[in-house]
Length: 185
Image 1 (cartoon, one colour):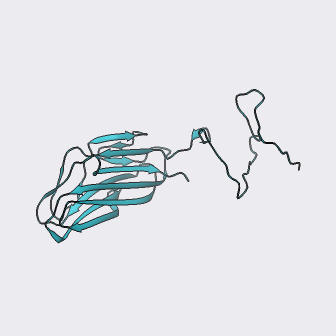
Image 2: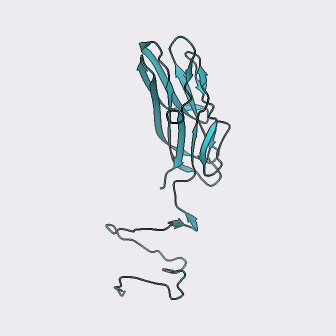
């Protein structure tokens, strides 16, 4: 095996450089850095944290005490794969893998330090993660999780509180939202 020492490789045609032949393995050794200033592709597809989405709430959602209430997201900020619809994210065809999800909402004072607000991420109709907050003032409640998903799995967000009366998840573009993206593996 021969070693070639160069500082730069340019294709003769000036359009594309091919390293190896179909079936070959090109290895970047451990400890080496592979810098990509342009678009990194795998199998002809760009490698990125997609699909991804962000939705938020423009009108309040009523939450009765001791009841899981699905958040009805009514403003889509972006959705790279058109995978968010009917208040849930559904994994598109060919996009199975690990996903990061984060959601938060603002809920008003529940009237006591023993009162609790919860936010829950559901996977296929079952609770997968939750977060909570206690207190006597308006609070932000948040949850994040990483889930391994298959095609057609779906993710929803629910609110729950134990304040004794119906309260609202507050509409707030900066404080009440749900987002997610596929992790690069």
